[in-house]
Image (cartoon, rainbow over all chains, first blue to last red):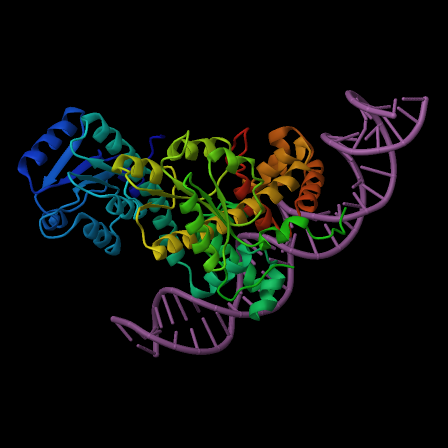
Length: 223
Length: 223
DNA sequence: GGCGATCCTAAACCTCGGTATGGTCCGCGC
DNA sequence: GCGCGGACCATACCGAGGTTTAGGATCGCC
């Protein structure tokens, strides 16, 4: 994109993609790592889910290759744990003797793919490519959202309230009546909101509100 | 063009849900139909994909139960055909001897569930409930969208162009410069747009543009 | 007690949005 | 030819948006 120092987090996803592998079989870890490295992908392998959790996840698009049978914890349960811990990384399952219900459960829970051993290298690489791409996208969105939240956090309670009403389409005068203020006060809050949120126009602000999921808690529709 | 008798399609999804079953085995059709009717769901069964396609789909939340092995066409291929024909109905697969790759393919293509025979009645009912609910939602969204498209279609080319620029956050004067018009003309277009689209406020219009996916074809960013 | 943040308001002033009213020009179809 | 609709523009007017300047009030914190 454009070369610009801009915001610090803008370059975050510039780090190179990483593929994580969890498998208790060292030879599997070895051969998968080699496979990924052979196509220029960074790979990190772990013998257990626990080891993986010790590792500090980089801020880069990544994915996780998981055997359905893990040492202590099933792959599916680990998938659920990650989700519960709010760690969202695309998962590719592999299995030697999985069944269909497992597959369905994994896919419903958002797995990218589910490969049966033995699989062709190319299938694995295709799955990884898709997973990395998915993660790149979701990271991009998450980043935008978190920056929006950061900005939104700088608003005072009043400003947030006014923002909700403004983006819902009410006029200043209606907002003033709604929350018992003078119109001029609303205008001033509004000005602060635009500046703090970095919105260049009202449509801009509306889109931000959409992303933030702002439906006026004290709901109201327009004229 | 103001006084308008609501819209006819608003009550569309009021029809009762329907479950479609395609299976070449009459006893399967029979028992599934009975199962669904026993819980008060309308069911329609077909012996082949072809028969199903003859049937005029109702405008109601519905779903399709499909055996992976269909008479002439595999269930997966039929799923692909439906998608290609732009028929979007949630599909629940069932199979006696399916494998994991099939399952993965079906789920990736958007299947709601994939049940292995024999399955528990309750599992099927749960899947159907989820599928119907999914269809209800997507129908709701599709309906809103199609009404928006209808309104959008009444705009003249110029008005569409102005709408894109307005919702992107440009001021009238900037829009005028952008496309070589007098500011007053832009204002007039703008007025027409608001009336024709039924937007009560600028934020309203912005949200419509979002849903319509309007990014100015002749792209331009603001100030 | 002083400091800063939040919240509120007023007057003055300017820009922008929006709606008439009225008119020109062009292309299309009957 | 005529009517019609789309596109365009001008003048005038008014309401809404937005900033600046200049306050006042409350509350928590050092």
